[in-house]
Amino acid sequence: MRSLFWRVLAAFWLALLLVAGLSILLGRALNQDTWIIARYPGLHDLAKQWTVLYEQQGPDAAQAFLVQRRHDFELSVQVLDESGQRLVDGTYLPRPPRPPEEGFNRSNLPRFPWRQLSQEYTSAQSDHTYLFIYRIPHGALEAWHRSSLLWPLSALGIALVVLTIVSLLVTLSITRPLNRLRRAVHDLGQTAYQQDSLARLAKRGDELGVLARDFNRMGARLQRLINSQRQLLRDVSHELRSPLARLRIALALAERATPEARANMWPRLEQECDRLEGLIGEILALARLDADPGPASHIVLLPLLERLREDAQLLAPEQHIQLRVPADLALDGWPDMLERALDNLLRNALRFNPSNKPLEVDAESDDQVLRISIRDHGPGADAEHLAHLGEPFFRAPNQDSPGHGLGLAIARRAVERHAGRLRLANHPEGGFVATIELPVTRHIA
Image 1 (cartoon, helix red, strand yellow):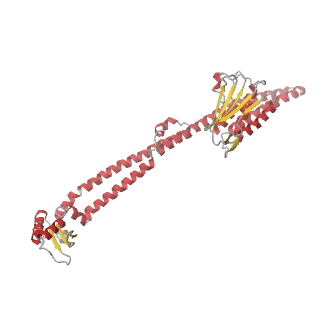
Image 2 (cartoon, rainbow, N blue to C red):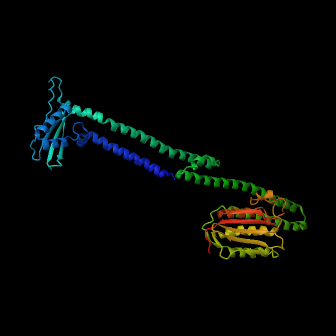
Image 3 (cartoon, helix red, strand yellow):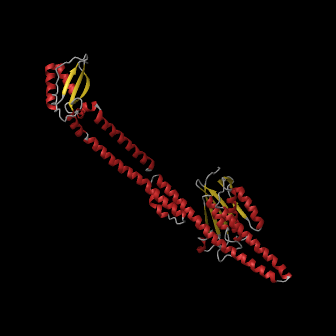
């Protein structure tokens, strides 16, 4: 992963190293005597060469060497021993001519017309230490400074250009994605979010790419929830209109009816009220699935299905529900939510399953997926309606069912809250099968 953290850290470290290194070099070039002794023409290895000549060929050869250096580089050199005595005559620079008294301002001139430097050198052969005193004219030293500082200043300029470019690239690599994320947040707030707006950013391998992918998933889920809520409100208003209209008609008829006819209408009014109450209860159950369910708990599957089988056979005692579920099969989830989903699937299957054939409930698990299938031996569903099963308020036109089309929707939503999937299909050998696939979180062997 090309981490943004390491890019920013490397950019700052590069800036610190370049600035610190160039500052040290520039400071040495301007102020350090050792820098001048090591770099100034004529001073490099002067002490070593003079010491070899002095110890091997004598004072005359060493003095001649200093005279030649003064002639070539305008350099004055004095050499002292450890007691402070001069070993050779050395060389002296001529004093500049005294300027005329008129118009002369002594403050404009340095106190001495040269810069004096000193260097100690210990001979590798005799272990004697010599003190070299150098005097360099200010004019020659300034001219050398101007030429020698050209490369540090050039390097500093190049470093500033490089740091500017790197800083600009790092800044753009952060601000551009953040601007795109800001626009995406604005679009999401206006319910006009498009996943394509962050498609390029989501391909990045750094933290901003991970953030864009997470934001895409969040935006897609919010858009689905918003669209689902809008569709649910439209469907709810449509479904509630019919029982309310029937109630209003029945009440209007009851006002004009005789007492005997009005008494006959009360059961119909109660029936319509019960239907309306059942519809509102299912709508609330569907809405609660989007709320926070709280912490998950451990669910052993077989006792849950056995309890649902007992409840279902109270309503349809002529039906036989066959369970093939391992006793040790378990998962982590929300018991009430999962029980509601399985109960709706069982009740839906009981409405279509013939009494002479068993309703089959099977469960199995591998290392990744736990599958629960509920199969009936009824007529099944038309192929063109399979894709719409599980949508709120959808009922197949050719199936006369007393429900409101919310049972499968509640089951699908409950399974999705468990990060699973509900598959609805016709069985190859006849009938209809509903299969719940849940990720395995805990499997007790």
